[in-house]
Length: 114
Length: 112
Image 1: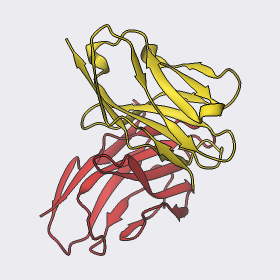
Image 2: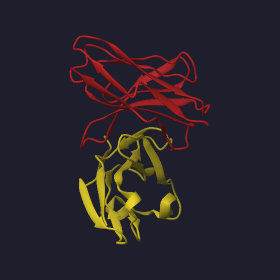
Image 3: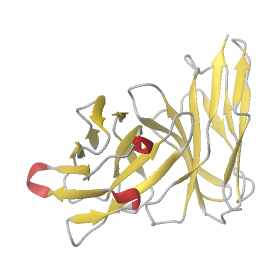
């Protein structure tokens, strides 16, 4: 079975600092990969997705992620964090590369210091 | 505005009672999903439906039931057979193959 690991449960960064959230997956082939963000008590919103092609993908709110096949990773990055980025972030893998059956990681909660 | 509406937002239940969570979408999406969210465990798939009058079990379907009589609606019933029903429940929909799930704001169920 596929699995998604987000090693960091909590991360705290200062406003304006750079951010990298880690995501590792186990899957036999090149999967479809996603990052979602969740504000407290809310549903999830898609930040970006990777299906194929350029391994560096751009998303909304200034986020980007890089697919590294050799490391089975899909880390999320942002050059300069804003206080409004404080939220929980979920990495997800598509179970069958059909674009609609996702397995989610456990999430990383981001806190931003002023 | 198009979107997904879940109700109620908060629900309290006594042990042994069934409860039904509502999920309605006006996005004209074929696929709909129910996820359960517990702290530190991410989201786990309960049931999904890719077309009206058809649905499949996800990873944790035991103690839950669904129906899909209309494209717009995908209600979830949490039955008394569910051993640990206290959780945050999220409904989502998607265009087939797009990979983008659109989520409702969730329903928080607490069993007293």
